[in-house]
Amino acid sequence: MDSSATDAVKGQAKMATGIGPVILFGPPGAGKGTQAKVITETYGVPQISTGDILRDNVSRGTELGLQAKAVMNRGELVPDDLVCGMVAERLAVSDCFKGFILDGFPRTLAQAKWLDKFFGNRAFETLKDCRPAVVVRIVVGYNVLLQRLTGRVSCPTCGRSYNVHTQPPRVPDTCDVDGSRLFTRKDDREEVIAERLKAYEQQTLPLAEYYRKRGRLLEIDGDQPVEKVTADVLRAIEHGNSL
Ligand code: AP5
Image (cartoon, rainbow, N blue to C red; front, side):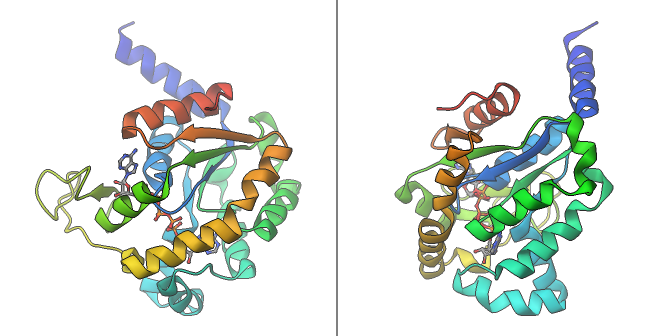
């Protein structure tokens, strides 16, 4: 069997087994979305990005979107009950039953406690054959985060992120994959970025201790080339290795 066929078989085996829940944890700009897309492609499990679901609701003008819009534009966190309800709805879809990637959730202690309780529900019996939840923390310093967020442009069609400083698209303003015109997120303005990073420090960072105490936290150096971070994230998921 040639190596590409072997890789394909390995990929199918991974998908059949299921990887269980993976929580990608880190500040705005750490690379959670970038890595979630690769994990999704590798294991065939869905990426559940609370930010993406909220932005979709905002653009469709749903009740949830109307409630979340101003909060997000200020760089603050959307209330826990709204976000938990939204996540519960998404996790009930059958594509999550062999595992999923949570990107941007949980973000407060209340959300983490809610998730622990939710994992105890009958809906998650299918996950018993999968691995236990792992929390992969992507660690990146403040100045690098600022540079990444001020330079980010995203594709409205496939969701891929580029960076005008470090990872520009081949043709300016155009997605390499599907040719869509790239856009800058409303909350990637400097004053909003500062608020988002403050919200992370104050409300989200304490969760690292919450998961460390439970023996579930794996830490990855996110200030490396994307492929190197990916290798470390996949190793953490497969073998439980961290920094
Ligand atoms: P959300 O959409 O989740 O945004 P975020 O957490 O601020 O994270 P980002 O998407 O900005 O960054 P990322 O870590 O995914 O990095 P990326 O891969 O894009 O949330 C937005 C808002 O929604 C929140 O502010 C809040 O209001 C609300 N919200 C969402 N979830 C919520 C919750 N659970 N509770 C309450 N409110 C919630 O990469 C960033 C850039 O860096 C890109 O340009 C990328 O190309 C580049 N890059 C990535 N990796 C590397 C690398 N290794 N080297 C160089 N460049 C890199």
